[in-house]
Amino acid sequence: MRKAWWFVALAAVGVALTAGAQDQDSFTPMPLDSGFGRMDVTPPTTPPEEIIKKFAAKESEFQEALNHYTYRRIARVQTLDDDNKVDGEWYEVDDVIFDPSGRRTEHVVDAPASTLQRVMMSPSDMQDIQHGYPFVLTTDQVASYNIHYAGRQKVDEVDCYVFDVSPKQIEKGKRYLAGRIWVDATDLQIVVVDGRMVPDDTRKGKEDLHPPFMTWRQQVDGKYWFPVYTKGEGILHFAGGNGYMGEDVHIRDVVKYTDYKRFGSTSKIIFQGQDITPNQPNQPNQQSAPSQPQR
Image (cartoon, rainbow, N blue to C red; front, side):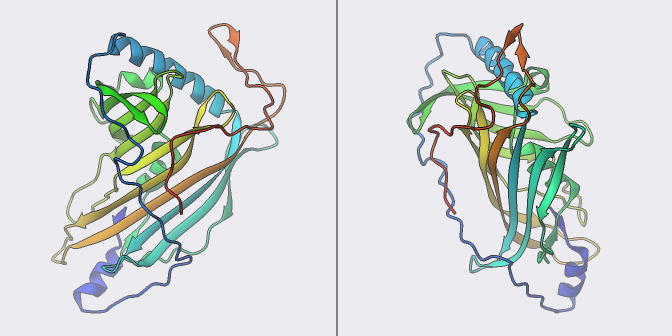
């Protein structure tokens, strides 16, 4: 999220700007301890390294399956004033689909003009919405992270292993999760993600900052846990630059993922020599999942 340079310049000479939000929906944040049981820090009977290896394999399997699904993504980024009222908004609805040649693509369904004035969307914001918030930790990605076992905890009725993750090193142009993941102890798939996407750019006048977020998954096809809801919120401190004053900006991100449908009827997913293609691909069946905050 970058500071809008033209707003900083106008603010410096005392010009006030106002913005009308496209949709003044209110969102109730989910407290971090809501639905989360007591953490059991007893060492697991299975070595953490073995658990990591197994759930990373299941995440790789899920990522391959996800590549064969279409879905709708509804993303909303808002700024809030001191009274917690929306004073600017970016909103976009995209369908992640396949074109006639079978190539995966994104189709913009609705994208009204942004009313954000104190900040502007950056390429890293879009990267987080498209790839970071629906975080998947595959076998290929494990080597890029420090992963530490934190304990075992229930999220609602789902028994989970809990791991803290952080990037070992940061490569230019890439985004990483720094935070915590909850992995279903039975299905060995991520069900909740809590943290931040990094790195931030903290250079004065060039800040590109991002709020902490949580993503919830839900069983959609009776086999895989798909991202269904992301909420990010925080106060970002922009130091300013070129002699201009700094500013704290209250940011709220909400992303919903809906209408998962398996594309085509002849494709198969092969994992370790076995056909793991879900049954009834065009009629996903939503199963119980950890509770999510409601709009």
